[in-house]
Picture: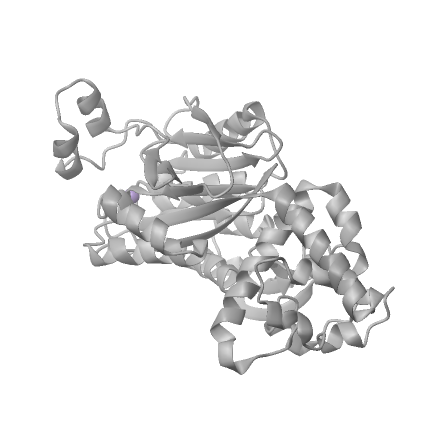
Length: 434
Ligand code: MN
C-alpha cells in the first residue's frame, strides 16, 4: 500500500501581469490548472476546476474521477455564458492515489503535464492536447521544432469550451521512491528534461523541489505563469509499521504511557534520534492522558507537534521543514487506514485535528483557521488570523471557492490561497482584451 506527500509552488512569471494558473494539493488529490481566456476568465476557469476537484475525498474510482472532471467542465461552460467570461477555459492535470492498488489515476485535458521520475528516468505520462503535438504526430513538425514553435501555446482541448469534453485518463503504476510531477507549460517551455531531472534528483524535499523548479523556469525567461506540484510516493505499510515499532519502544523507554500516541505522530523514523531524549513539549506533559491539551496562542503559530524535543534555536530551519513535512505525510497515513486513526488515540487525533489550515467566512470577513472544518472529535478549529478581507468584495467564484473550506498544510499556503481569492478581478477592467 502506498501513500504520498508532496509540495507545490506557483509564480506569475517574469512577463505576465496575473497568474492564471491554479493548483491543488490535499491528502487525496493533486492538480494543476492553467487558465486561458480574457483577463478575468482564465483565472476563473482554473479556479472553478480546482474548486470542483477540491471536493474529492478519499480514494475514488477512475469512473468517479472522470465524472468530477466532466462536471467541472460543465460548470465552467455554464459560467462562461456571462459575457465578461465568454471563451474562458482551462487545462487540467490531476492525480489521485489508489493506495490499495499501488497506482495513481491521472486525468488530463490540455497541455499541462504529468511526469514520473523513476530510477533517474523522466517519463511524460500525459499526451498534450496542443497544436504542436498534433503536428508532431502527423509528422509535420519535429519534436525539436515543437519546443520553439511560436504557436506552442495553442491547446486543442480545454475544460469549459464545450458542454461535453473528452478526458484522458491514465492509470499509472506507483511504487516507493517514485517522484511524480504535475506542471503547467510554463515549466517545460523554459526548463528542458535534463534540467527538470537534475532538480528532482538533487532536491530532497518535495516542497523545495517544486519551489526550485518554479524559480528556475522564471530565471530561464518566465514567459508564462509557472506551476509545479511534486508528489513523493512512499510505502505506507512500512512507514506505519516503523512508526508503531518506534512508538512501543518510546513507551517502554520513558515509561510515560500518555506519550505513546504522540510519539507515533510526532516522531516518524526520519526524525533525528536526539529529539527522543529531550523533554516532551509542555502541552503534552501537563495534559491528562484522557484529555486533549488545550490550544494556546503560542501553539497556533509555532506548533510543537513535530518537535517533541522543544525549540532548538541551532537548527530552527531544519525544525521548520519537519513541521511542514510531517503533518501532511502522517495525515495521509491516517486517511489510508482506519486502524491508524484508532491506534493513534486521543493525542494523535489532537495532532490531526490541528494539522491543517483553512479559510472561512466569519461575519463577512475572511478568517484563517487552524484545524479541520467542523472540528475533529472534540477539537474545534482555532482562529489564526483575520485577513480583514470582506467576503462581499470577492467575486462569486472566489466566494464559492472560499465556501469549499479547502485545507492547506501550512499557514503560508492558506494565506496564498486567500491572496489569490482577493486578486480575482471583479470588474471589467481587462487590459489584455477578451
Ligand atoms: Mn500556461
